[in-house]
Image 1 (tube, rainbow, N blue to C red):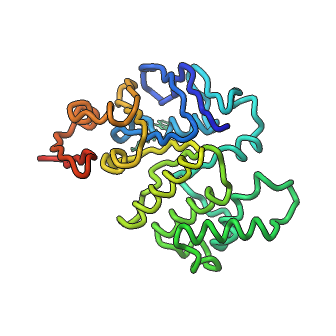
Image 2 (image 1 turned 30 degrees about the horizontal axis):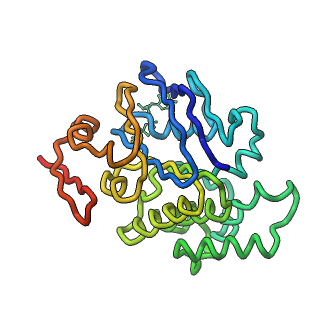
Image 3 (image 1 turned 180 degrees about the vertical axis):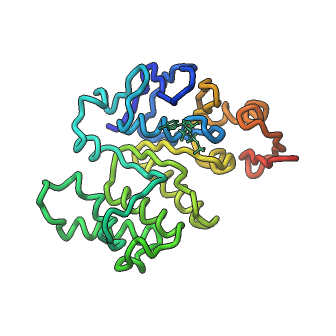
Length: 255
Ligand SMILES: Nc1ncnc2c1ncn2[C@@H]1O[C@H](COP(=O)(O)OP(=O)(O)OP(=O)(O)O)[C@@H](O)[C@H]1O
């Protein structure tokens, strides 16, 4: 299954001390939110969890095996990435882009089959971009591109999602529907790790939180235990007002 273990992991953030090693496991069914101010190391952590960057110390294990022992193809079958930087190497349509999600499941020169195309179309419909399937990705708005990137990972159908600010560029309705999609993925036995700047989305949707402080300090646990106003104010250096709506805390920055 898609258990991701961080074994005394120290993420290699350039020019920073090592801080507290991360010792935790992300289990199927959980949604982990990574919170922290700009520059705290959230993206660097996600890159490390994806095996794109070596840790300074410790190890990442996916499904009981060190990430480095798994081939890139095997990692790509199990792990889906929604990252911030996207380079459009060559012009591709929305449907062709979503189909890239099937590549880890196909042999190198195998064409996509009808069921791969059906999966991609379902994912585009789920992300509300089916009507754009013949458009070149380079012509899309920021929010449309973001939804196509998420549809590509949905087409990939990984056991574990790593998503860097997946609600970036999205309007309120699409933020909610993307978070609902990730919750659905977790409910179906997958695991989700996402970096978020929106505390309220974290409070509403995450089962667990990892708080990364700029100096390398970190704490983690079930979301309800981590959403302590004083800890969050210290995390962001920002006073907050808190209210409860439908049993969920809501945080508003105050002057
Ligand atoms: N290649 C690099 N060389 C030097 N510094 C780097 C490099 N990559 C990242 N950093 C620094 O490491 C720190 C962590 O960066 P990272 O992108 O992980 O932060 P983040 O928490 O995701 O920030 P944000 O909220 O702004 O997206 C930053 O101070 C960044 O400038």
